[in-house]
Length: 344
Ligand code: DAH
Image 1 (cartoon, rainbow, N blue to C red):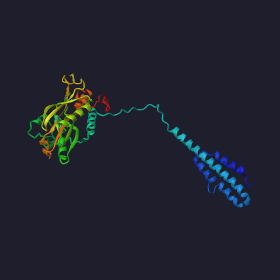
Image 2: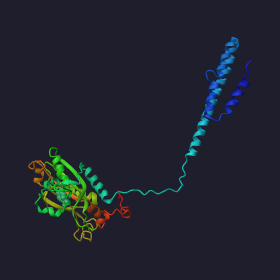
Image 3: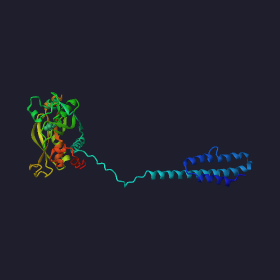
Image 4: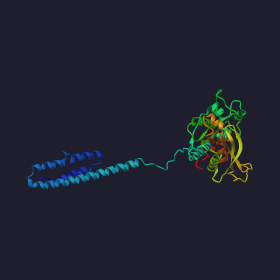
């Protein structure tokens, strides 16, 4: 006769002594496996009288269920214990002192450049760059400034050799874009970049500076389009209540040409020291792309017209942030640069 009590007691003790998952797996095989103790009991059924089998089977099944549940419970308890242990081990002491890593910031000229790019990208413009070591052809010739032209004096130049120079203005990118897209009109681009001129550095001049060129060419482009575009630029960069005015001017690559002023954002136009009493601040040069410039790039000037502008990024940054000396923008003094926040 089987001693159920002793069997249960024996395996109960074995279960209660389990501390590791590997021991549990072993015990599971020994007790519930194909060749385990429970299977062994089942095997004994064959030797029983038929009338005894039902009661025996019931006992064995009861034990099987009991230990299956028990082992599952132990398994869960072990899992839980392991989780608690790994949580305790990996916990952070958030009160620990740490080494402060100063956050990087954008340079004010980069901030202005990105803001301008965002304004124009939002109007469907593409951003195009060009080489800083440029051919005389794109920097001067194609901009309507041939070799003997006195306007070359205004842009005293660093030459690399007879044909190559450090770009003196981003208008060089404009003439490249005109050529590259002469068969792919309309054109709507802004071209940011660094420029170089032989200049004596002082509070308002630097031999290195940055500009953003704008260029739109298509059928029926007018000065009205230019004015509307510049007005939007002024509002986005200097405040929604700004207006602009265009003053007649002269550039070799535009006809007519205009200097654009924005209403003074310090005094609102009444006149103050920033605008030198005039109520207006000059921000950029602009005009209708000269027909010769279109023709030199292979664009039919009787069919297409365009406007262009070029804005100095240091100048806009100085106006926006009240920076009085342009040299501050090139000295890379972190105490100075730490003041500027892209999201202001
Ligand atoms: N290239 C001129 C400069 O450096 C700026 C400029 C004026 C660009 C008028 C233009 C323009 O595209 O239309 O002073």
